[in-house]
Length: 180
Image 1: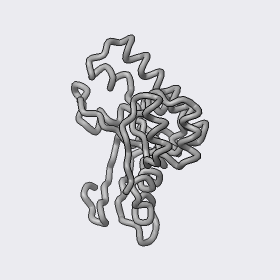
Image 2: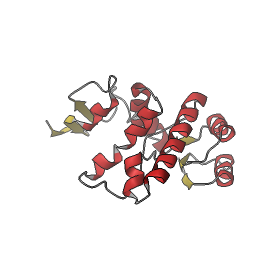
Image 3: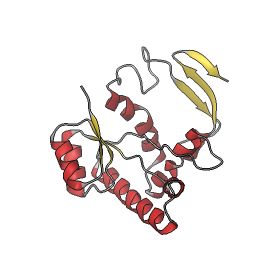
Image 4: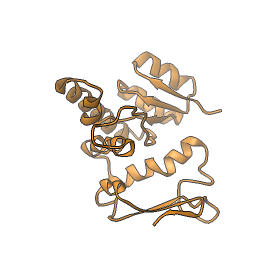
């Protein structure tokens, strides 16, 4: 049974990693020792990496939202550099005015871009690494024979600009066309 844990403090994070959890969600205060331990143990980081706009929609003032965003950008850079496994995910529950839930959630891409995470790696965190974390990597997460046909097509190349994932033109779910 895989377990992921919401973690906010350093002591809790170490306990979770050493306890064998599959992933830490949030982990805003993770230090390099913990990120390396996560890499060594195969613990994923699902950082729910809020952007400034996400923090601000939670009614934080600009200074606090900026500080928290910068802290997340720093943690993302360090996790990527260390090689900590990451999966893209969010549990954002407050919409940004004028945006729907998907648009609000995809605001976190601003944080990943600010952390200079390559678009190719971000796509992997959304697909193959997320499938691995969920334990479905033998049937989902990539386009291959015998894998579930869950496919999206985008107007532009997400390897050139990860924001291209915001403009989905085609959706196939379990081999059935949902949108074209």
